[in-house]
Length: 381
Image (cartoon, rainbow, N blue to C red; front, side, top):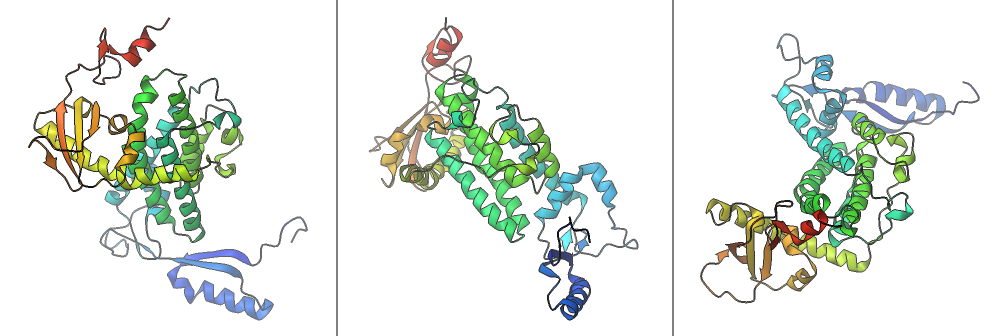
C-alpha cells in the first residue's frame, strides 16, 4: 500500500443481503480474527431482497422482473433512490410501477417546495447581502417554522446515524407538505406577494426562506444528491451557505436563537393555534358548501371557546392573516343560536360586506378598488 494512502482497515461498514450472515459477513470475520485478532468491520448492515408488489420473488418464469435500467430511464436516479430510502430495507423490498409512481409524486412535492423557496430568493432585498444581514428580529410565525426545522435537523441526524433512512424521508415529506406547503408558505404568501418589496415583513420571510432552504438541502443531499446539487447550483447569492463549491460541502445550519419566550409562543402555536386552525378550515368548508361565503378570504369568523386555556395568547397573533380570512373575533358569550359546535369551540361565520381588493383579493375597506396597503404601493410617489 502507498504511504500516502490511509489504512482503511477495518472497514467502517459492511453492506450486503441477509443471506450473507453465513457467507461474506461470517467468512471475513473468521479470517480476520484468525489473522489479525480483530474483526474486519466496525458495523454490519444487512438488507432484504427486492420482490414484486405481491411479495413474490422476481423471476423470469413469473414474468415479474423489472429492469433497473428501464426504471432509470423512466423515473430518473433520484426517484429510484427515494424508493429505496422510503422502504424498510430490513425486510423484503417491494417494487412495482404503481409504487414508483407514488414515490415520484412525493419526490415532486419535495422538489416543488424547494423550487418555491429558491424562486423567492432570486430577488433578495439590497439589505440582505451577507450572513450578518440575516441577523434580524423575525415574526412569531417565522420563529415557529425555524424551530420546527431545527427539530427536523436533529432527528434526521440521529436517524442517519442509525441508518433509519425511511424515517428521515417520512419526516422530511411531512415537513414539506404539512408544515410548509399547507401552513407556513400558504400563510405568508399574501405578504410575500403583496407587501412592499423592501418591507420589514418581506425581509423577515426571505430570511426565513434562506434558513429553510439551507436546512432542507442539508437533510436532502444524502437522499437525493442530484436534485440537491441542481438546486444548489442555481442559488442566486454567493454568501453564507451559498459560497461553497457543492451542496455536499454545506456547513451546519446556523439558526436564530430561540429564547424562552419564543419557545413558549411556539408551544401555543403548536398546541393551541394549529388545532384551532384545523377546526376552522373544516368549518369554513361547510360555510362554502352552504353558500354563506364563496371563498375563505370573504369570511368574518366569530369564535367562542369551550375553554379559556391559552386563548389570552391569541391577542398577540394576527389570527385573521394566519387563518387567511377577513376578520376574527374571540367572543366571551353566544348571543344567538347561529353558532356551530366543534370539538373545542363554537363558530359563527358571516360574509364580509366589503368588495375584494383588485390587487391582493382580500376583503377590506377599499379606496379606488384597492385596500389601503395596495393603494399606497400602487400610487406611491
